[in-house]
Length: 146
Image (cartoon, rainbow, N blue to C red; front, top):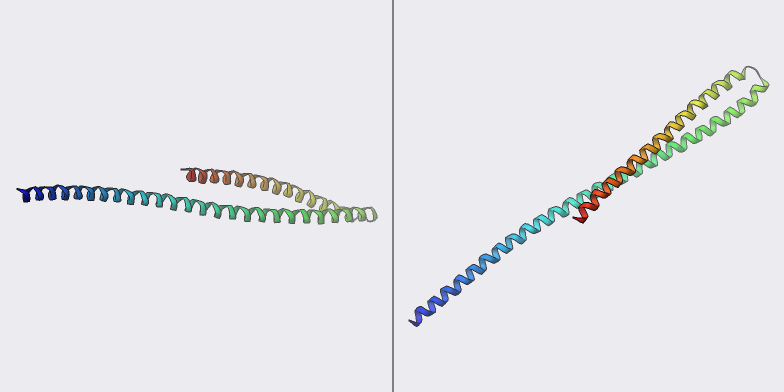
């Protein structure tokens, strides 16, 4: 009877150990699933941040290119203005230079319009890129805040 009592106690404890083992196994599986979920979220956030940095670098390079192009157009404009000034002086001295001065003036006006269009294009481009950058930053902030 004592032996049966010990065996019963042993079986009861063994069953408790098996239940504890099963509960720990379930908890471990849940922890592993949670770890995978968190890891996937972290990888997604890292990928989004990397894409944001690539976009930002590209935008900075494009802005630099536009600034260089704008500076070149301004230099050309100054050169043309200088040429126009020279031609205006010659116009007074020689009648035949008046036609060249008109052509230069027309070219200057054309380039002036082109420069104005370039400046408008630059402003639209920068506004578009800034809006896109703000949108991507909000997306990243939302992902980070999640």
